[in-house]
Length: 312
Image (cartoon, rainbow, N blue to C red; front, side, top):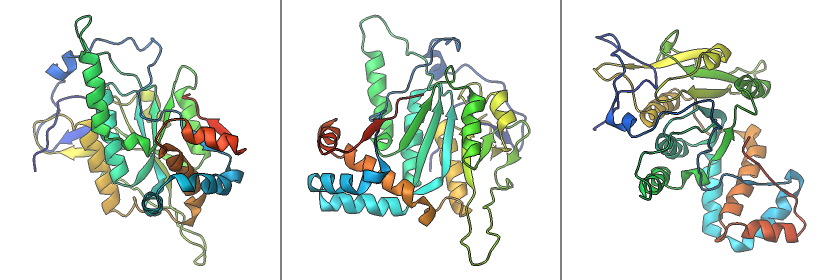
């Protein structure tokens, strides 16, 4: 199996035989202009960036209204996939520099059965190109091909830290019971030894409650920020045994998920996630209509309350 890696500083790794190499200026890095992080963040362009939210009290009515428009086979597929979805683990990408990396990660996360992805800022650098050429358009098309529509089925939340500071974002996660685990070479523990542990039930008659966690990855070039590390409950890194300095962001995501799967940490959520399953099923049904906005129009005509999640 061939694994292609790019020398960058985005994901923390440690060589078993040699010290870390100094960052090099690769051709892929030179394709992008420098970026002033004081500028207004730009949101990554996803297939469905503003999912409609159905009033939970009206979900059954909404299902009834939408069911005639969706094939029984597709609905059966939705329910089967939802049975295997893991809702207690989120992935967070902090200020990603290259959107194509994030799109590739989305495909990986969907394949592993994860549902929730958070992105702070969604900052990316504009591709270089002469005025009037279609370099940027072609790159955007390639980016979306990397995701192969996976963003359509994931719950992607984008945060603008100029409006919601990072400490408030992490604070929100912690209030919801999530532990924050971040990739970091400095002060990090080998992922094979990192204590990803479930929360055990205090009573043998009560089902075990699995730990809710957010796995955080940093910017491909600069890594995670000191602030994110200081807000984290634990730091870990992926070991490496060759000359390459780091894994590509998508590869790092895949390896981390594979390890969590092997440890039995990524697994289908139980009855505690039924409310979330119902919410996601409603979103998927809306997104299955042939024209954007068609489902919303029908639901609103039938008196279903809808809300749109605007990017923070």
